[in-house]
Image (cartoon, rainbow, N blue to C red):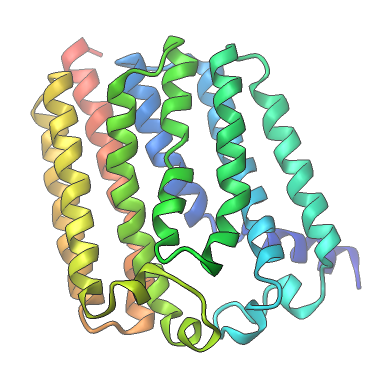
Length: 290
């Protein structure tokens, strides 16, 4: 195998060719940074969190493929992943995950002690999530906690504390993750039923679509309440209305449960994250005069 082929295999292992996971992990972190700072966060902290998000999502993908190495060959969407085809060995995947996690840890060492302490449960959640699909009927909820931990870490890094508001934002993001990852799980539901994997798409049964939309509404409702506590302005609430419209559009894509359209709906969540960040950013600029 040529160097180019190996590089391509490692790129696919950590999903750098599919950045949607990085974006869905990054948007809530950016919300947290901007809300914690009530404006532009410290540039060094911002760079550390962006790079850390990329590193930890990449490490999580390597662990996920290690955990699913005997499952992925039986799922149509994942059967060509590097571990499933044997291009990369399980040992290599674990070494990649460990190396990326170490780099992420070294990256946050200039930050305060509280942020470093919060990185420990964040790492545990990221590493353990792939194994929850064997026994937990709602692994998307576990992923929601893992994908939300950038928020309290952002508050800790920026302010030195984690106020109740940060945990309210974690709760909001938890519902968003359940919504979009259930859309993702709908893509593989038939294969997962045959293999015996547990997902929210299976657990919710015929209420899957209703559950997704209820999670979207709850997510946006909690953000609206957080906006009231923070006394945010009309631009923030306008972004929530846009996000609600985007979620309604997703309903048109998932209502027939067609795998290809459910996958498109999952990808579409990037625009929800971006819209909310834009609302936070513009609202802050308007209130502070730039």
